[in-house]
Every structure is written in C-alpha cells, then in structure tokens.
Image (tube, rainbow, N blue to C red; front, side, top):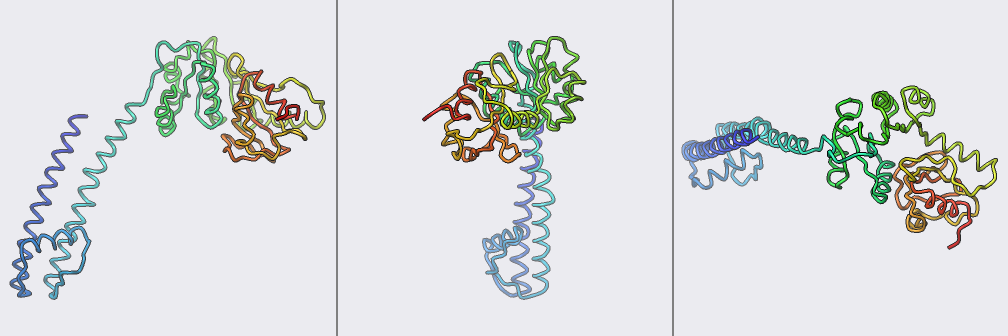
Length: 342
C-alpha cells in the first residue's frame, strides 16, 4: 500500500513539473507570437494568465486574438489542457486514489466474528425488519452477528457499531467465520433463492436452529425441505390474523407469534374497531414508550411497509408487525383491541 502511495506521489510531482513546464513554455511562445504576429506587447505575467485560462478552458475573453495563427495556437493550448486533465490527471491520479481509498475501506471491513462469540444468532441479510430486531436483541443483551455481502450495508453497520462481518452467507467459510459451530440460531433474511442456499448450507452444521423469512408463501415448503426448522411468511401470518379477526373471538393471548431468541418474538397484531390507536401516527401512538414493543412493519390495505416512518397512520384495517417479549406484546394487544385506555 505504501509503495502504491509513493508511486502516486511521484506521478503527481512529475505531472506538476510537466504542467509548470508547459505553462512557462506556452507563455514564452505567446509573448513572442503576440509581438511578432499581432504587433502587441504583453507581459510574461499576462501570458501566464492567458495560458492558464486557456488550458483550463475558462476563457474570460479579456485577451482577444485577431489572427488565425494565434487562434490556432490557442486551440493547441486548449487541447493540451484537456489532455492533461482528462487524459492523465483523472485516470492516473484521481481514479487510483479513489480506488485505493475504497480498497482501504473494504480491507477494514470485519470478516471474522470474535472468538468469544457463542450461543448467538447469525442474521443473514440486513433490512428494516432486521434493524428493529437488532434493537430488541441489543436491549435484551442477546449476542448476535449480521452477515451481509453488500458493502453499503456493512459500512452502515460498522459506523453504527453493530456486530457484523462482510461476506456471502451462501459460502461455507463465511458461516464458519460467523462461528456457526457455536451459534444457537440462524436467521435467513434474504431473497427466497438465496435463503434456500443459506438454509441448505446451514443445515449441514449440527445443533443450529434455522429460521427462514420467505417472500413468496409458495416457496415455504422448499425452504423447509432445504432444512429450515421454521419458515416465517409475513403474508401468511397476515392472512391468518385477518381470518381470526373476521371469524374468531377476541382472545387475550398473542397468537401466531414466532420466537426468535428466548422470550423475544415477532408477531402481527391486527387493529380492531374501537382501538385507541386508530387514526394516529406511529409517533402519536407512542407504542414503543407505552409497551416496549418495536413496530418493524405495518400492513395497510394488504401492502406491507417494513421500517415504517413515524408519520405512518394506523388505520382500522392495519396490522402491526412487531418484535418484543410476550409481556410487551400482550400490552400492545390490549391497545390494538381497545382494552387499554389513555
């Protein structure tokens, strides 16, 4: 790396010497041409001023050339400036410096989990739902690590001091680097095709519970065949909850919940008529403050929004996708069914 930096420095010095040499040479030629051809005298400082503005294609127009020969010379100076900037400086100086910077950033990305990490959750893929789950895991002090192949995601996680490693979770060595042999659970949270590869690979390791998030309900059975212990489909849970709402009696228990880690669960809770939450934004509802539950998504009119904004309005037909403990979720259920008062 140091050798590359030295190479760049030598090139920059060479480039500056060439620029200075060309500027002085063109200025001297310009002084003579103005004196001989246009019969005008200009100072050397004025000549340097003209050369710089011509090479940089600024062209203020305060020095007017009246002969074709001087105009042709001006074109040569302009082309030289363009060549030096776009043909040499950008590709041979700017681009290598940017590439070196990106390389340094990538080299700084964590690739191996700490040796002391054990009994943890491996989360494959980062998105808004996982972001909320991570918040809960941190508050409950559950060990976890995120594995993601996308550079931007890892940059974000590293900057926010969230445990992570950069790599493709469909590769065996990456899961080993995530200490899968010491992990308790693995959450596959990428697209269905990638999840199938992750699940199939993870199932070859003993004593690991595999949870897969499925986008298309039809793919649930394939993920189960691949080795997933549990397959979670937000759409399927949504349908079940809406069916219970339409035909079943109200119950006090939180149903259709999925346990992620010990008592930490994810559940979808429909908003029933009479709920105090109807018509309020998530900010106004203060769900987190009142119950401790983190709302990671919201169904409105059959469409799921992950990581909803604080201005998202809770409607009578909304369904909240939430992460929390059973006690916290039970408190929220009281709010969604109208059994909780301000």
